Length: 292
Image (cartoon, rainbow, N blue to C red):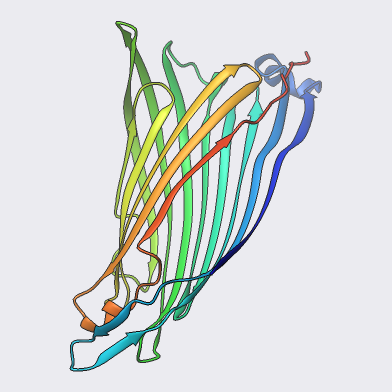
């Protein structure tokens, strides 16, 4: 049995009125930045609450001449996602947040993630056919799993991913190729884990405005439980006219639990396959005019 509740909010816009500098102390700044105009648009806000049961996994041998019968485990899941677009004279950025809380028959898992993508635009001089942007990702994961011996194990991990990327576009024979030059800086804080997340991260740029992200997480908790997660995301962004943007994102995730400890074979904290999610966002942005 599966029941879900979905609440979606789209197209909420906040305008930040143009600001001009007129003080005598700011004459030099006024010459460089005569005015500033910006707007903030909330593209979507999505809340999803699910409660469903997983089929029985049957009887599994624990490895010490004992048979463990795994009954149906109820799974409740709460997902909150949102995205916002900020645009000014010199900066354009798209921010996304996601919070997921999963409660299962033997524990709970909480994951929070925030991603910010920004293009510096005219703030710095960028040669033709190039784009300078940076991404910032912050994640937090906390899981509490319970084994058949009724012992709770808490695992948590936090991390910050930050990299600056310069994209060079090469056009030949009516084709486009993106050559990224990437600077990666990774700062991770681990608590109760002997392996950090994400362990492997790679980013591929195919054509114009098409991005594929892939990383694999290998988490080993203090009681030797091991979770291997593979997450693949992709995005396509296309601007039709100056005030219309179409953003398409595709993501797929698979989870597998494994360990050398026989007893942990009964702990499968999530369905092995989460499925593929397709969503289309079409935010409409008003044309900004600089008041000088």
